Image 1 (cartoon, rainbow, N blue to C red):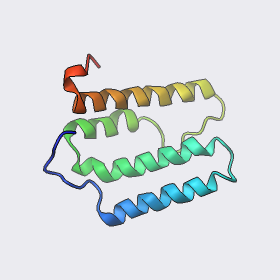
Image 2 (cartoon, helix red, strand yellow):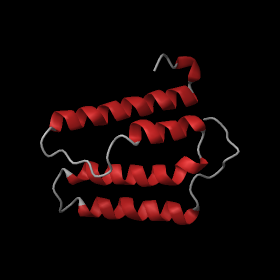
Image 3 (cartoon, one colour):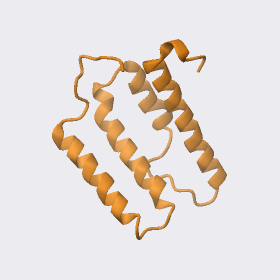
Image 4 (cartoon, rainbow, N blue to C red):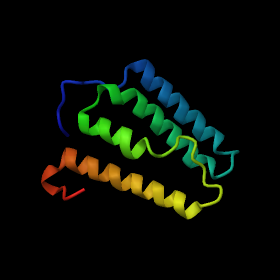
Length: 111
């Protein structure tokens, strides 16, 4: 992993807040409709992005504002499930490209 002078992107309170959200979201999934799982994970991803963006590298900030920022936090597949899944696939590919460029730049190709 690349080293950075920014040792922490979350302080303990922020990390505990995110942990509490993830754990309580996991519990609510027992009783909620299946569509809520992706919604809760996207909400957590946006919360994490909001916390790390000001402290992240330019490339990570661009990913957070670009591909992640284009997916609404409250996106739920009501009608166009295939389109929704396609947007999530695109987001995963964009993240993979970002991580490859960051951690294995010799293996990253054109993006």
